[in-house]
Image: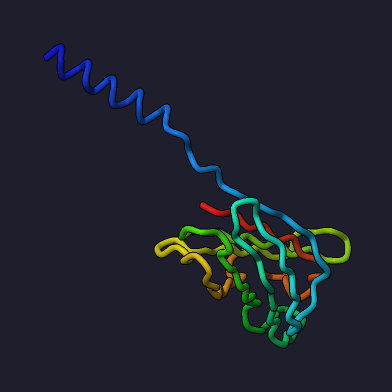
Length: 146
């Protein structure tokens, strides 16, 4: 029993002391434009590049007691310029002219990594915090490799 405990302790210590691959991240602010492909081209330190983004804002009708319209969406292209497969996450926050947060969305490659040398397209939907997303003037986007 003592031998088994010592072996398990050694295994735990070796596992804890192994180097952990650090996650790369980036975060940038941009002017918001609907239906325009914004070429970005910035990358995390470990090779996950945000190539471009495009927002789609549906027409909005406002009445005295109602607001109708579809959901704001965003497409983003991520490329893996590293030598190994990597998972990535994207978070976007939309701000109005006064700096108020008016929309948020997030997504990423949760189940399958982006293979080395490949690009993957992601569609994010602003579906929880979105009532005033159509008033966006700027956005902040963050990309993180996993």
